Amino acid sequence: MKIKKEIIIGLVVIASLCLLVVGFNFLKGRLIFQNNRIYYAVYNKIGGLITSSPVLINGFKIGQVNDIHFHPDKSGRLVVALLLNSDIQIPENSIAKIYSLDLMGTKGIEITFSDLHGYLHPGDTLKTSIERELKEEVNAQMIPLKNKAEELMSTFDSLLTAFNSVFTDSVRENLKKSFFSIRQAVQNISQTTGAVNSLVIGQSSRIADIFTQIHNITEAISNSSKDISKIISNFSSISDSLTKINFTTVIRNTNSTLISLNEVISRINRGEGTIGLLAKDDQLYHNLQNSSAELYKLLQDIRENPKKYLHFSLISFGKDKKQKDISANQSDAKLQHDSFYSIQIMSGKTFIPSDSPVFTGLDSVFVFNNNGYFKYLTGYTHNIDSIYSIKSRIKLLFPDAFIVSFKEGKQVPLF
Image (cartoon, rainbow, N blue to C red; front, side, top):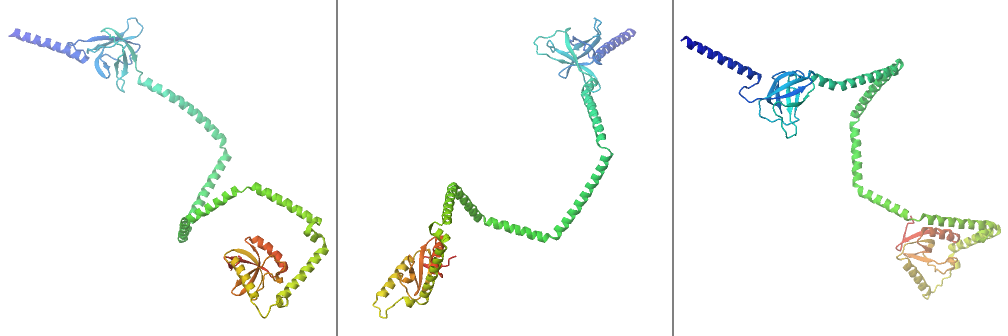
């Protein structure tokens, strides 16, 4: 019985030792019963990398750091043994990079594959690199900011110096006065807006009436848009007509007329022609004046005593009546459907033939029969300027003559 107990105790101790060795290696990441391969990497520094640090590919753990020791060449470089427990093949020129696993600075190794098709064998050495530490990274990022901050401080210092040199005591005092003025201006504006508001409130009904009137005006303009368009079209037509006028020809004709007029005036001044003789020969002027006075007296006497110059037979054989009707009908036929200007020299109920001596000196006389009341006209034109010229000549013979206007055989007002 004693032998059996010792055997059992020995077996338990041996089993415990085996379990201890297996558990220790398991905790170390080494699997005794698995095919493990070792690769090497040489670093100048490892930044806190320790044994059992993980080895990863694309974030997947394929092994761990098995051992770290100095290089035998005594250069101070460190040799890191990578224990890989996976059958994955590592291409040549792949890089074993030490990097930080977290913000606390825990290190690990990331293997980055190359594009080569050849593969490393266990015991080969990988190319290496190391990620900068957080402190180094922060320093690298902060150095540009530090330089910019120093430049900014220098600029700010220069600005303060310039500010102090510009803003002297007098400038500060002026600024105070300016701000005080601005404050008063703002207060005045506030008071003005209050007054305007009060005015608007008090005159709101009138303002509403004004806007109503404006609306009515705009509506009237809108309703008259067609008339306005016609007016604009008429102005456009007038402007087109003006553009078609040959002003050069008009000016040339005007100059020619002025030259002719100057020549006529010069001849008058020299005493040439009828007008020149009248202007220069006083005797001729007085004779014409006397003749016109005598003629005026004669015509006045004819108007006042027509029977003295006109002889009518008491026994009419129809000849005078026939002549009377023919002249009246011929004149009426001419004036029946026409519009014109003429000069009325006399009128009356007694018919006077157009070849009567009363009308001596006139080219032609028309008789207008208005219900038995005869009007005697001379001159026939459609131009108002021409009729005024005719009137000036007729007035010498008949001072009471005046212009009359006819439209379609009916006498109408002159204007």
